[in-house]
Length: 511
Image 1 (cartoon, one colour):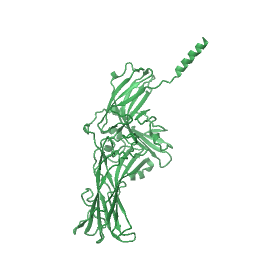
Image 2: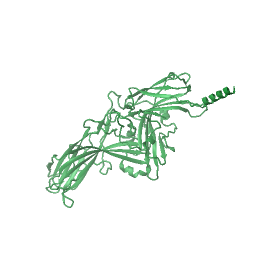
Image 3: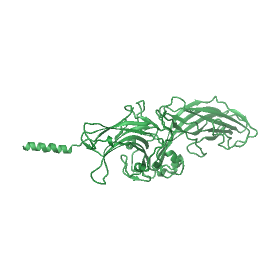
Image 4: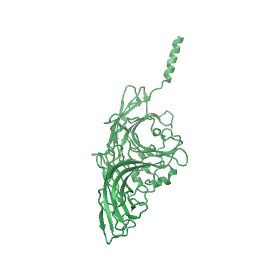
């Protein structure tokens, strides 16, 4: 009897300490390919089913299915060791669940599959409430409330052999996922709900982006240079033959496909480089040599929302405030233009024109150089095709509250002065280049307004909450509450530190 009693008590004790597993949640997206993260664009419908199973009776009170978009930055501090960063939930759509879909009572039983369908539509714009920070440019809010693309979030490419390289630095990321959260209300009053399980599945979003008007580039712009003048000499110690003028207008944008961004099999756009040579006397224009084209990919990120469009100059002046820029250069093409012909112009009544005159169109001639005083000059034009390489993945140009991506086309040309066989000087331009994305055929009309109440806005964006990424030691909420400032001491520059704990290549996230 004694032995039997001991065994009974021991078995009961083991049962009491047995850790029961959490509910299992499977998020199945319609038409999903195994191992690949599905890609969507503006107006696309994200459909799927949430399946929940348990191994024991589990009481719950609320099931929440949401489509979320978040951005995250980490910036090296200049004044002291360590990093500062920010975390921003800019999108949160909630799937309504009818009461009849829940079991009665709300207890999940083992041996049964509980299925809940969901449908989300990728919006064209964000709610204006997510961008209520201070601004110094009136047009910034228009750009910040456009849906940004998935950015810096490692995913398997469609060829299943590589990871998508969108040239984003490790210090910033924009992610989208479908999240399922199962909660239970505690017995105690005024206590916070207990999260039984929270699971997310990543999706890739490349929004449709329309063409914007060409940028108005100033003479002292630190990112772009659409006109340049340079003296042409026979040698280092010899006199000047004349002055070479280079000018180029912003080319038509490169249009990406939302299903396979960046992989272009043909010429995406063309840029025209206009050249002018103003001789000192009767000198002949230099002989042209080679044209190189490169794409300068600039990423701006900050721990504080941008109040204006970012630039390299503002990075220098605000370096102590947690702002940074990362630039990567992608070679595009090299071609010989030695056969290009100069055209001679003679104008006995030439009027002086502004230095930026005639650079707004690729068919017009650049204005005279600053030292031009004659009536004879030469012009030439070079057409440069622009094709994006397949080795990189490109996202549309965008400006969000914390992260921005801009492109510049760098055009360099070499030339040989007459009677000079030693020197091969070069001159370069940096022209703005916009990357847009076409909409999918059959998507809804742009400009569709979604009706949402102020109570829903307050619930989604202004209710108090604390969301901390891994390894964050301190969270300081700042206005507006949708932004969270993160102060991290001695955080190593490791991309994995910015990932949720259980991100897999299949796109599932368990929190």
